[in-house]
Length: 250
Image (cartoon, rainbow, N blue to C red; front, side, top):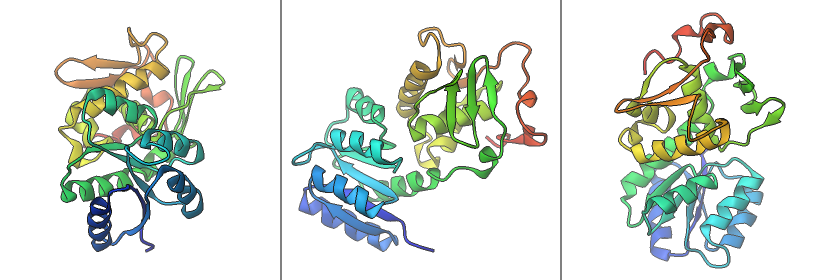
């Protein structure tokens, strides 16, 4: 099996040495860019499986690199930053980052995050085989990873889509915070409720007609979230026979 290729974008020699050495031990192929312009060039030329991206960079900062990277490909991105405020977190997620790690970080934590992000970047086969789910004028096409309102496609980041598809595949059921985090982000994230809160907020802004009064993704206070089907509509109307048991282990 080919090694996963990781593009590390950082201008601190100590960080480069530490991350490259430890990821190499884990069996990853690590390539390095020390500024934002070079990072975009390598992203095009090397087609990495994952990008670890520092925010404070010469020439182009990490936010701009991530924004331009999203125009090129859906390559997963883990952002590194010395700032940990929710505003910074939301800004990174808003431009499509898949994860966010604050410096100084534990190398074991980084390795765990790398594994998790690479693992979840692969689409579950059972979702790929499902027929589209329609809620009013909203359509979730699992096979093509597309979400549409009428004929207009709604642009979602990979993690926004993964969250939506997981909630939709369990429509009508209250999904606990830790179960959503475990299935969408990975077992390493079961306590990262701030990630979930931020992503639900962004998702509602894109799919709800009135995000301040959500009708599709409902909050169940103290428990989690539920994808709400319209009254009288059954999930079985829009999915193949035998899918009803999907997600029961959550």
